[in-house]
Image (cartoon, rainbow, N blue to C red; front, side):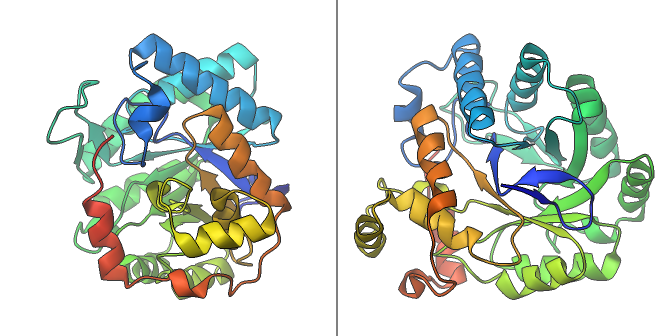
Amino acid sequence: MDTTLGETGLTVTRIGLGLAALGRPAYINLGHAADLAGHTDVGSMEQGAHAVLDAAYAGGVRYFDAARSYGKAEAFLASWLDRRGLGPDEVTVGSKWGYTYTADWRIDVDVHEVKDLGAENFRRQLAETRELLGDHLRLYQIHSATLDSGVLDDREVLGELAALRAGGVRIGFTTSGPRQADTIERALEVGGFDTVQSTWNLFERSAGAALVRAHEAGLGVIIKEALANGRLTDRGDVGELVSAARDAGVAPDALALAAVLAQPWVDVVLSGASTVWELQSNLTALQVGVSAQHLEGLAEDREMYWEKRSELPWN
């Protein structure tokens, strides 16, 4: 299950755990509110996050992916690492900067996070991340780099990233939206990045060729939203996927994750589980064999995919 994240030298596992749904009471995964079952106070959510982290670790997961905007995800991860007594060499931790969580633990707000990819925000958020994660931080990523944001051409930001990289922390970027491929190509031109984290799933495959080039250039490739925020689980009720999963003797989520794992340019696929049973179902993907062309008929137009994603409700 262990692998190396591109040419970073970091040891990771084929399935990692993303904490987007574990660190805040509202998120856009289908059924998120049902998963929490009303237990949305900080203490209960920390206990829930620790339970999923424990299950992930027991299942062999050793890569954990957080962000400043994931509510208290970094804090929950830090308290778990401390409780387990896990050192920086026993797990690989990545986090992200660029969005600030603004919902104040509420669900009924119009804006849950605010984006700022400027150098001042980078310095502020890096200090916050380091205060929580300390030497466990091995990978720091731009959260949702886009061409429109200008971050890939911001000399001050690039200088800050280069300095952090010179200090031993690997540097990555994540992508989102219908122009993911263009962002990846520009980042490869700019250089200075060790990893890329992008959305690629049975519905949205448009970044595939660019991710192949990133892989060939030595970058580690991390895939997020492999289950399309729950649309590629039994909650999404995608007939073709459900039927194929039934034939394979697994749950739809496992088959969808296995299809991503089958891509030879993928290093890590993130589980976005918010419950132990979801995490355990996700991990069965490691025992599922599928072809690279599996379920081709599910592919959507990229603009349509991102429009549908933008319409998903928080909780």
